[in-house]
Image (tube, rainbow, N blue to C red; front, side, top):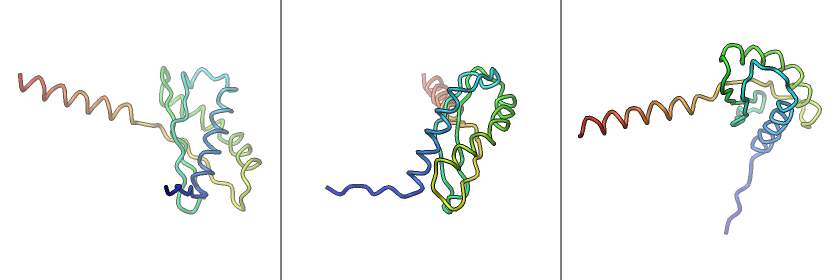
Length: 116
């Protein structure tokens, strides 16, 4: 059985996900609602880490503002935890997977209704 070899960017992304998720537990910011880190994607050159998140029960603009304010402290934590020449720049991005799933389910329901 061949064992999958993880790329360095996979390990860095997972470390960043853990750092952000752990740090988020300490944040006391109502603007974030129920905040969850869903994924981290690293650019090919490892210079940018896209941190995908959901913030249920939160206004998207206010959640974004709160994350923009938290970015410097998260960036410092990543810099002190990751051994790299250049620390990846953290970019928070709203995970729209749930919205996409809801749209697909609604389309399927409409098709099913039309068939009856």
